[in-house]
Image (cartoon, rainbow, N blue to C red):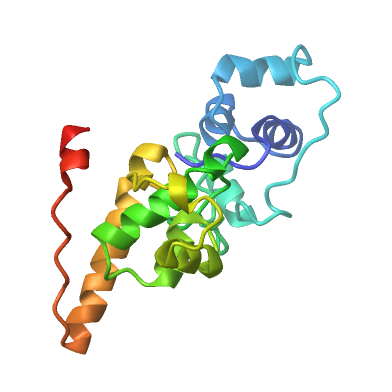
Length: 193
């Protein structure tokens, strides 16, 4: 259940300004009725300024009047028009200790998923197209030490994000009428490892 912003401050305001029961306020604010009663008695939440849920668009005044008239009714939050957008995919902050693993992950993706575009690899790993190009051309400053390693195992992206990018790239190739290139077989050194 979604709770109002600042539940204790909201409970303080509802206690002071409405005739709702302790159970109604507790249910709305996600608290125990005894905690609401303690707030009303002045034992808890001393000094907390009440937070008006009507003025802040969390509940309608008509909804409060409806619940005041019926002690069994429960207050309902107004659905938010502007929910906080969650980032579903894309690169996130990479710790300094893992940044040296990016070229290895780039090499792995270039070899195993040639259908991925540079923009997709860049978004997935949080790297630049310039770095991808240098790894591809073997002109990266550390190219002698680059070993293709799975970015999921390295912790640079999630398996879900990688799968979504590969699926998107495969669909793009299918729309363009191209065939999906097969991944090369593992080398003897990789099979030994």
